[in-house]
Image (cartoon, rainbow, N blue to C red):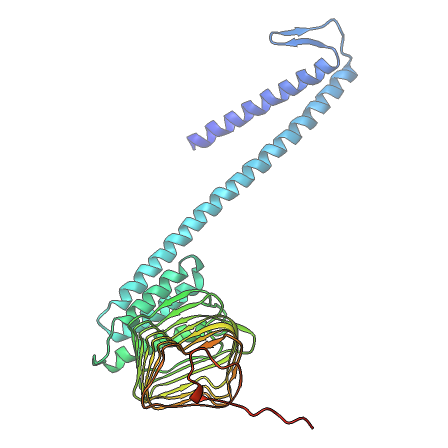
Length: 365
């Protein structure tokens, strides 16, 4: 109350001083004042009409000035209140984050499951810390390794994390997580992953060193899209695992360098490499049924340098190869059944001539 009274008195004093200064300034313009300090009046007499006009002008000028000060004060007050509101919101969101993180560390699976949902909601509502929320969910998923026995409740927690990621990478998601990083390095996947709208431009989906066992990984995207960055370096795909990648991609990277494909199925029959980098350098195909038939390698790179085709069927039939796009430098062909029948375009760099069986040229007429 005391502070308000002091502020009110100061405001009144400032208003009086402003009015007096304005009156003197206008009076000097009429020739009634010779100097302001000390104040010296001239011999010019002011009529009652002059005084009335000066007073009215003073009130008008003071009112305008006061209005400007009031607007500045209101703006400043609004900024202060907004800053206080943001701090309060940030503190509230931080509290929710701590609570969700604590739930993830709970002994009970039901509480951990609630923590997953809470953290996903928080990521939707807190764009400034969305990456942090995603990192925590991914870190939790990475905690469990191959061969570890999982209770039913814990399996549901892990599946919910993947389901949340898949839902938020969908193009129709209300709150998209596209464009963020997903660090799932060395994670163990025995659950299917469907990314039917791709992973999104500038999205970094990293499963380096991960193990996929008896699961399915499907990545698809309508024509003309940016693939984003998908990294599966040194990942292992075994058992009945199926990997399917389809779509027409002009930007991005699909990286399977040094990956181990042990059995299962690899299907890239509906992919069009038109600027994206497709990299299988140093990968090993061992007993895998790999299908590239009908794919189009138009532009960009499709690298199979140092790839080991150890066993299984690898089908490059009916593929179209653009100039300088595909390369098989130092690749080794052991007991795998590798076929390049009815292919079109330029022979890939480093591919042995005895494997290359181009489509016969059409006879005119």
